[in-house]
Amino acid sequence: MQNLARNVDALTQGLKYSISGLMNLAQATDPENAVFFVNFNQDCSSLAVGSKAGYKIFSLSSVDHLEKIFENGECASRPQNEDVCIIERLFNSSLIAVVSASSPRKLKVCHFRKGTEICNYSYSNTVLAVKLNRARLVVCLEESLYIHNIRDMQVLHTIRDTPPNLAGLCSLSINSDTSYLAYPGSNTIGEVQIFDAMNLQAKTMIPAHDSPLAALAFSPNGTKVATASEKGTVIRVFHVNDGTKLFEFRRGVKRCVTISSLAFSIDSIFLCCSSNTETVHIFKLEEPREVPQQQPDEAQSWMGYLTKAVSASANYLPSQVTDVFNQGRAFASVHLPFQGLKNVCAIATIQKVLRLLVASADGYLYVYNLDTSEGGDCPLFKQHRLDGKQDEVDCASVSAAGSCSGESSAQTAPQTVQNTESEKYHEIIAATESPPKGDGTFRLDDDAEFPPVTQRTD
Image (cartoon, rainbow, N blue to C red; front, side, top):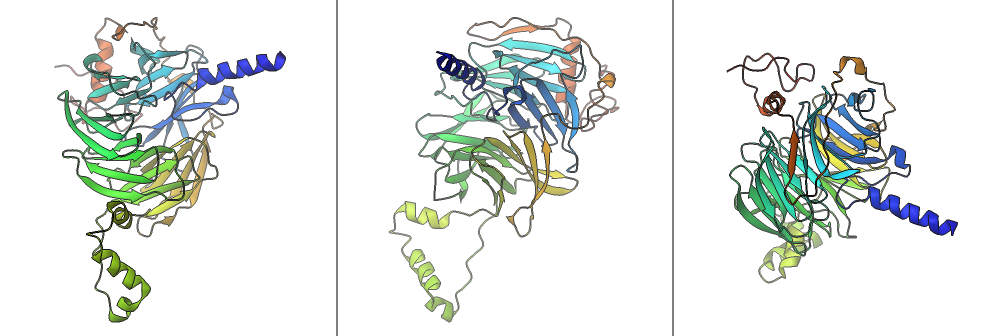
């Protein structure tokens, strides 16, 4: 009986902390220190970590140390033990979107530096993912997507009856001029539905894979979308406007894997892909070079013969065979010190050097150097703990204004609970202006100067 009780307790805990699609990262062995969620902000300048104890935000301005910008459990006036399973930051602003495992149907939009809650919304089902840019905030449920105007958090459009999307798979372009949204158009094959979240209309459908989708990512300017399927062997890049396939890369042929994440570099030249294996692949998005004319002795070699045979037979070989020969290979790779753990990867420029970043369910951020000329194996440069075992941040300088809360509601449409004072929404408007308007006394890219102390007067 005792064994049975222990098994029931373990199952209950597992269900509580493994709501499908709710977390980017797997649960750690110790639930008290479990890393529920890790994600980079839109320009990879900061890292947000959600856990049973709350959330932390780290700056990625240096590779030598991980500077903690904020931790919500450090001040007595802030709620303790808020089990945060989704935390998304809007660029370098103080605006964050938070979902807790204890209230998985409720989204809170907060000003983390002031410790104030701007508003909260409750939905009819579990919030599986939240994406935001300076124009839109998208909430993904299992069979619907809600598109909010981020300046006043009003619901502009609802995409209903989407194919079951248990993983909450979706991607929003960080380019607010286009604000394209990508999500699975099917749960049996790899169709990508592209939706124009600015003009609120469907744009195109891309038949990307034969198997269901496992990962999606937009390039920073929103013109390209990268995809991977549940097989995990092939990564494809398509043009958003017409669905043209631009690149195709083979991640591997020996085994099928579970793709954890896809991410472009800020210049869209590199694309990284992480999975549940120990290898992270970095692909270079460049047109293949023309094959040079073969010398007579090369033409007589086995390689020359094979190349000539493949070229000559391209018209009658099965398309699957010719596709394999045309697929690109990884430009560079990383060998992680673990496998079997979920993780999220990113390519960021830190201290003027391009780095590959991997945040893992083991509670570490791994920083690798990337040779942009030669590629090859990327050496590990640094690793940082994400469990708060770094230098503490002085919380006295952070305003400790109280936060408001609202009861969650099981309505079919989200219900808003917000302060009637419009000043709160000025903070959202200020955060979404890029470049900021007004007297120019603050900069969005400077944590010390944002948010502004004074509001614009028109």
